Image (cartoon, rainbow, N blue to C red):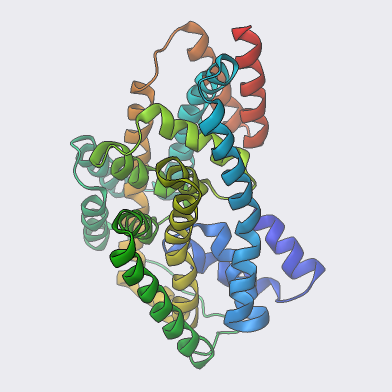
Length: 359
């Protein structure tokens, strides 16, 4: 998705140059949140200020939200039908392959030294012991400060964003968000709890949308038991069908809990930190990138998500009744993803084969 955004913004519309876009992608990779959504917001910020960032952010996420609402409604009505059950049983196996592939992809980019591998293993062990993932992230950040490579070469931004350009709108947005949370607290406490949880999940999702999956699974399934593991896996499946980030699974969770309003509140809660962080940190990106301590801490956090994804892969696998056919499904999907086959094709082919084999 980031590659498509670059083609549109840099080559076709020429809203910003290639160096500025690369700075934006680097920023989005350093801060928590859905990377593609944040890249869209960054383009809008460069082109038209904060209002442009809001327009880009909403426009980019709206198709995925609308489609997920429709799919969630259909799932609620038809998830007990034999053909639907057969499709999702096969797709749950593919989800295991998807998360395993994400762990491998994170590992290739984040685990460069024995120190980074050690941080990932510590994170996997702590998460396996059901330690709160946010606490695991804090430990990983500390280990990153202590163990990570101290040699890095920061590069100054070609065209930095002025702080005055976004400071006042950011404060207004934070005030509006705080007012919204306050109203929810007094009007509908259950919706407030949902929004606050999703906000916290995105706020600690360093490394992009896939980093939110361990956090969301822990909070939704293990801590609060709002959904069971198979239903949550089905939500991830639907999230992969939509043309958006995997964190759109939050919409599915909210819809299953509280209907349309729950889907809307969960979506707003899980995407709000991504937007605010882009607006708030873009003017200070050069300072952040030149900070040795910041880079080391972020490096440790990214290593921890390899361990978190690895542990979640094991837990997702434990929720499935395995047989030879499911093992073949998972192995084939994993190999296809490693070979860069588009994830949408993997999901669609898996659904069709699951239905055919069940007939």
